[in-house]
Amino acid sequence: IVGLWQPGTHTGFGVTEAPGAPAWFEVNTREGEAVRDFFAGLFDLSAETMTEMVYHTLHADGRPCYGVLQMTDAWEGIDPVWTAYFAVADADATLERVKAAGGAVLYGPFDTPFGRVAVCKDPMDTVFSTIQLP
Image (cartoon, rainbow, N blue to C red):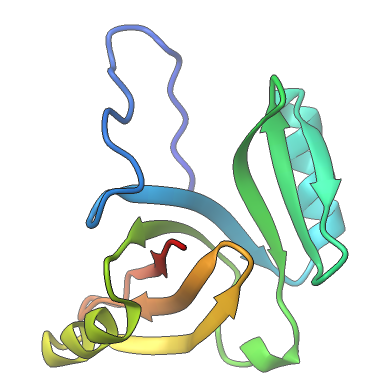
C-alpha cells in the first residue's frame, strides 16, 4: 500500500536523516525494471541504474526521491514491499533494540555505498528498514 498526497497545507518532512527520522524510501521487488518504469512513467521521473548492484533511483528535478531494489534469491521468504528507512546512529545497537522490543531482523545488516542497512519488522509484522548513514 502506498499513500500519495498533493502538496498544499501538509508540511511534508521537516526533519530527515536525523536518528529516528525518515532517511529514504524504497520499493523492494522481484520485478525491478518493470516497477522502475511504472513509477517513472506515473510520476514523470527520471531513472538511474547503479552498476554495483541492481538498484534504481528515481529522480524529480534532478534530486533522488526514492529507490527500487531488485530482490535476489538472498531475499527468499521476504515479500515485495514498500519500505521506509529510518536513520540510526548505531546500526548494530539499533538491531539489538529491535529484537529486545519484540521485533525481528529479516535481512542484514549489510554495508552499501549509502550506509549500513537492515530490513526489520515490528511485533505487528510491519516491515521497515534502518540505515546508519556514513
